[in-house]
Image (cartoon, rainbow, N blue to C red; front, side, top):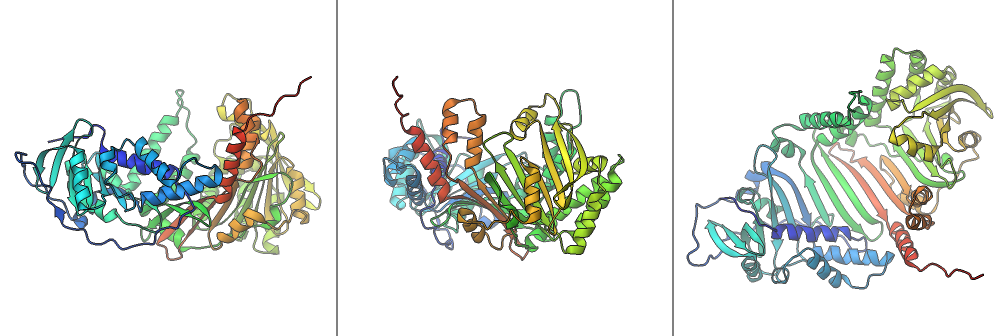
Amino acid sequence: MSSRWSVPVQVRVTMLALSVLSSAACAGTPAPAAKTPPPAPVAQPTAAPGVPAGPAVELLPAAAARGYLLASISIGSIDRLVENGTRLVNQAVPLPMDAKGVRDMLISQAGLPADISANLDFAGPSAAVFIAVGDKGESGTVLAVPARGPAEAQRVIAALGKPIMTRGPVTLVRSEANGSGWLTRVGNVVVLSDELEALSRGAQLALEARHPGADDVTAVIYPDAIARAHGTDVKTGIARLLEEARASQTPQGGAAVDEQAYESVAKMMGLAGDASSIELGLLPDPAKGLVLRARFLAREGTQLATIAHDVRPFELDAGVTGGPGTRFLVGSSSLGPFWQDVFQTYRARIAADKQKGATVALAYFDAMLASMAGQQTGVVWLGKEEPYFAGLFTSPLRDAAASAKVASALAAMDTPAAGALLRAQLGKTDLFDWTAKREAVGKVKTLHYRVKLKKTGAPERETLERVMGTSFDVYWAVARDRIVVAVGKDAKARLGAVASGKAAEQVSGALAAAQTAAKGRDAFFYFDLAPVLALAGTLGQDPRATAFARGATSPIPVVYTSGGDGAGKVYTADLTVTLAAFSAVGALIVGSMAPPPPTQGP
């Protein structure tokens, strides 16, 4: 017998959880990790007299059912999320209600009936698991939701609908309001699903996933199980996805897509495919802000395991962080196994290039690869006047002798060689025309690119022109024992300042605090979204949106870090929306709601 809740109660509870996540906060204290107690015996629901009984359904033990598990979501406490969310939002924009009022509003918006929500325990842990029920990607969802006690759990079951059938430990219930579905009870926990097979396979897994952890909310994804449920393996599945993406991007004329872009995507997806599981966590942290974390658990012998083992803490080149303009991005990362693999891909493309200049470009690239010290730093500025974009990027070299070799190879570069270098790294370059010449900036010999945008109908061309201008400069040099590339506005002056040491600047404020907190990580990127909003306001057409965006004068810091564990088992990436970001956005919202100043009379 197949049945479904027309408006499933488990969907409503999930909607409530997602509503809470949208307002999750950073002001509460994370719950400590706790061991999951063994599940209580499954209670046999008491059916009304006359309810037919079908063949008993076995609820598979967690160990036997684990191969069907595609993903899970665990929420330590909905009440704690609401409390944290309310406290965080209040730091930005004061709310007209307390945490209880917010929770009641979210419950109402989720459509959860009062006779059900009154008996649920929103302080206890809840979980949802997604279970394979076929070989063509079919899946079912199983929810494990706590009630305030066993008696309250029975009231929840009674409120869900009239019993239609029992099959051993599970009951099919139906009501006009909630539709129909299968459920069972374990102690004070109601376990429910609209798929009987999913409930059979996933009930114990849902109970197992129901526990507090290091993060307030944790989702776990199992790539192998998802691929297996679709009748394939991870590697084949990734190749199929990329092939479908290529087909969707091929224009009607049949022109080839940029294969190099897909190679880069394939490398990134391949790393995710090396993970036995991927954990996604949300952590409200009173000292940091809202932290989103991804943990990739590497399978032994994979490239991901190699990257996670090869820890190389980033080193920010403070000598390039100064200069005019508002910094949008300051970032640094180590050149570990992943980037080394990318560089080898670039080298292979240059070596296979039969056009003029490839031999000279290959000589430069080989000298660079042999001399790099394993770090890179980048800074991007967004100004208030055209051209808006400026960038400065450096890679330190091992020593003076290595610097001399790279400088000598760079001095041999010309326009054809520059073209080969660009083709290897950018792939399709049909948007650009360029020339390259050797030019001195102070005492430093540089390669000066002059890049012009072609007049094409490509939609991205207009965006590039508005941000970069119809043409822009790129200066490439070896200066002060590092490779320096300056792009966009004031590129020549910025490179000259680095070469002379005038741009050196000690980081401070939120950037310095974020850098200290990221110590030991392989990669660090600090974003200030305020200049992005300001630029959007400058380029935008809507006067109200423009006025809002131009009000972004305080920093809106968001920080990304990533790195391995040194043991080759886990690679972690974190994105932190800082407290300062919430406060700045709140001030923006409050400012946009203020009435305009009165106009002056004649």
